[in-house]
Length: 456
Image 1 (cartoon, helix red, strand yellow):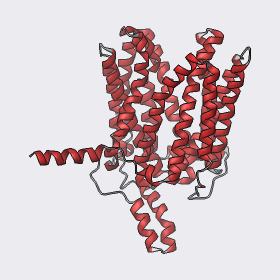
Image 2: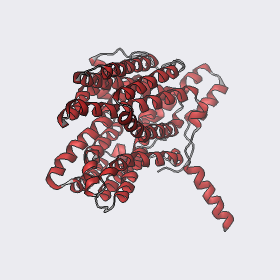
Image 3: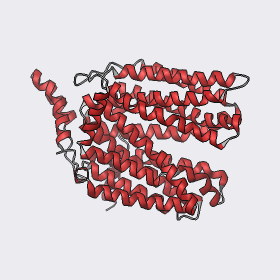
Image 4: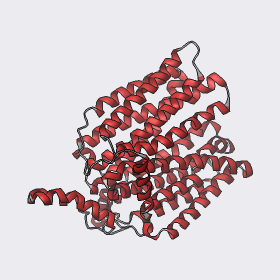
């Protein structure tokens, strides 16, 4: 019996542990991920510094709140247009040029901070510029990952990417708060500029990534074609709608300062902000099991439901550490949901549409939290922070249930049999088959074929 238990535990550990094979085997993925990590750290430091400096200059809650509003329109417009550009131009070049533009926006903030009298309008302008450029960069970056890796490595790649970026979201605010509080905004912007320069050095080493299909010229027509393609795919629409519903109803970060005060721990508000990231990191580190799941739509539904339930339970907890625990569970569930959504996107969307659909994806996971904070604030006015948090979690659970019932194609999605997933696998095999090289065909089949394992 002890030997059998030992074997079981070792087998369980192998299934749970994070699959690092995409990092080991694909140099360009390592470079792109390293660039994204460095950029994220610098960007988060600046995200902390801008409101801090705005408060210094204006002492106005409204002025600080308008920073986010200044970023919203460029994010929406450039997210959609950036997707169209990603399908029309060289994606590596778009990422590099966007990164250079982001660096220059941080240089603008640095120069302004060094002036004897820094200008408020520069903070708004630089924030809007950075939001727009970041929204252009993201679709091309995600489309590049789709071409760098075989389809069966996508879940592992997204788990590694989620781990890295969530770790940055935990470390970044802590570092940003320390730097801006001790050295001032100018030092924060200087660090951000340095991170962009290092990130550009890594991006310059990324090799050219060939397209699978002919590029589609960027135009309003091509953009609408991307939207129509998404609307024709209930499985894709399910990923977008479930995510927006989950975030709009249960994302409540705007409540955290009030919730911490209600719990008698106002100085521990940072613990609440960090909870989701901690849960996401743990979920990433134990994500080995996700490679064995094939019912990705059902996995998204279950994960989003767990997110809502955990948020609702957090509202009932009497202690800040219990609230932290359930918010961490929610963050882990959201990470798993995002992993499977990303897998559906990258295993089923043709390369010719990948950029435009990445732009739609950007909007789906960016607008939800903004709507969630607005919803949370309104409901808190009616019944307080705990009421808003709890009801939001319950509404999320109900909305996900409605989506699951209304979208059977999404609920029943199976990566082994879905027509779009099968077509993508065949598209990857077709060049080798045309060439007739049996060695190449066999190698590509090993990459494209899904391992035979139980479904979710």
